[in-house]
Length: 132
Image (cartoon, rainbow, N blue to C red; front, top):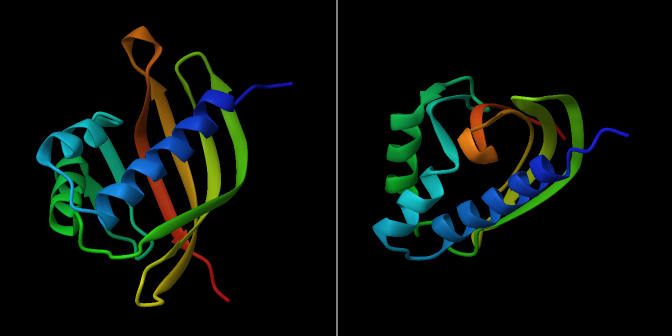
């Protein structure tokens, strides 16, 4: 059996950190710690089709930090797609809610790389909204 555990763990741990960053007032050092999870060459396609790079991700986090009261992320349907020596591709489902009752549901696919020393980093993320 192919073992995706370290990649699934990173999906979960990263989303805990993102949830905390968005829901609570945090300091700049914590943002820098969060951003170490992402490759400097990080790219992303948002659910609405917007292309983001690492600098845009940083800006997004800076702008939204501590501004989503009651923000929660629920993950599920983690699935390994490809595993190789340099990383992996996994998908998952992500449901977000906040104190206002705003809810979103998305399916995401992430390309992970293994950095020197074996650290798992996010290289590319593609998110798509789910209907219904």
